[in-house]
Image (cartoon, rainbow, N blue to C red):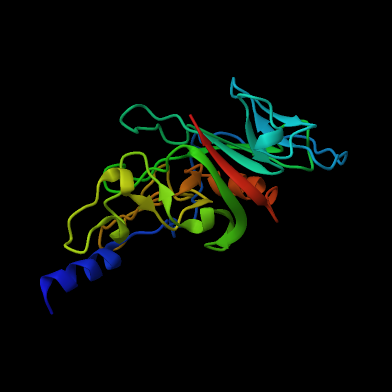
Amino acid sequence: MSTKLLLPILFALLFVSCEVDPYEETSGKTLEIGSLSKKTLSDALKDGQHWVEAADGTIYWDENATSQDTTKPGETYLGANVLVGTHNRDSNLNEPINSAKFQLYLEKNKNGSSAEIMGNTVPADVKKYGTLAEGLYPAKHTIYKNDGALLINGGRNLPTVNGNPNNPKNYYANESLKPSSEHVLDQVLFHKGNYGRKSLYTNPNKQGNVFPISAGCQTGGSGNCSLPLYRDFIKEAEGFEGNYLRKP
């Protein structure tokens, strides 16, 4: 078999999707992972109202917004249900662990976010894997690794900030890398973080190898006691069908 045939196969085998630490949480020191904040739900609804983002970044329920066309000038239509992820990255894509904020806005509670949790918007290694670009993407509740999660844009063809050498799609037939502006992320979800330790890499296995918790996904908090917080948060999103807003 020629080298040109072998390399694309090798890239496909090496491609890493979002993995979750297989180790269970251990008792001991509680790490700073951010607390889950829930807010009272309201059953009072009006048809034809949706969440919008004001020019100053405020998220609010607009009684008149049903699409971008009916949203006020300078504001962004977000839909009836939206998960908002606010990153804490610097210009080099470095983000302190558990410093991104995720807020869940649902049509059943027009007073504000229904749940909030701290987590991560970057992969385990920003040079090896792609980082999801800012934007508004469709999202839907699913099950991933036996827990609730949100599948973003059907899990495929999402834009990156600085490219993604981990995806075989980002290479030409001659094995050369496409321009980073053409790179995409696949298998992208919002899912639980590393509940085994405060890291975006798993605990070492018997051979001493570690694996990324995220190769491009958005994740909940990592560290001891992070899993119960995540499960409380994602429970609020059961049946979710709406959008994911990645914002600065």
